[in-house]
Length: 405
Image 1 (tube, helix red, strand yellow):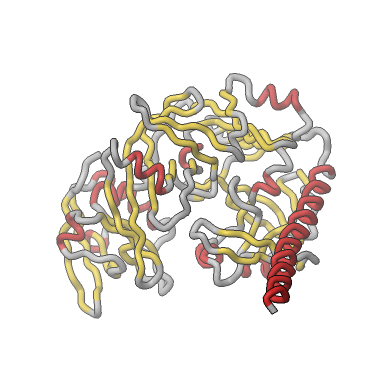
Image 2: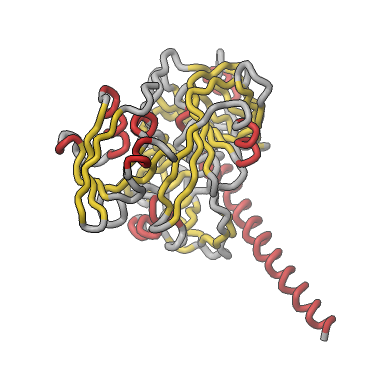
């Protein structure tokens, strides 16, 4: 009986292994065939598009206009509602097993498009993973993700100074030389780890590019432990689901050395519940003109600082007044983050309080772009007056300035 049990377990393990390997092989062969279908030389130009801090890639899938969030750290995927809207067809292959940033493993089914193009460039029939309906991405992703499987078919230049995006062939080395003239090359900078160092200190760490992250730099537990010994930081609580919360640590205004360049005024974030990864994201890359030079063995990153960079006030409300907002699933605006032991928490403001008004209605709580608009609004404010609803009662708060930097 014991040996029979061992045999069954072994067969199950072999089956699971084969299941994953078979999927990966079929998927890899399909993507390779796609890459070979592209012309040897081409050049496509279009304006750079942004949504908040994310880079947006406009495309047509099955004849329908769709905007993708560029994510160098993920595969191309879409929520169920988008799969349905684009009329994608199931692809005859076992689902792909993936583990997200929260450490949860799920199986993602493959879907196939009949056609996809970016401006005049035809990308044939890319595969798109369907995000399970109970995955947190499907609940927050209003746009599909264009991941490394499609991004890696070509090369991409983001000319932030001229607000122009240029797409060109992996085969065109002459074009690569033209587009990267005067740039700093970071070998394996797209899918490998590059070295960061805190300026004028001995602290260093490696990080991976992830344009799906809307932040400057995110660090895991190990790097946070090292940073926290030498750098000041602030601590926030962030609502997670209906009852739980994350602890966020923020190192604000940090200067880092990277690829021989000195990069000032960076925000380094640590989230307690995420995997122990170090990532530099889309906001960090907006400081540079850059080229994603994908190739057969990975991809090099070329960067050149922009002529003029003005940091976005994307953390202004939390830095100046110690709180941040978001629209809840029920449509109400609520407190999503609050500074730990800061004035707001001490005064009695709580996570998930429903915000009824700010400054007697002077700030618009209804229109889109809530976070960006609030961060702009607080720029020249020395105080705010909030009315919140909690357990059916209205409560007023007068919030003074917490920090001017």
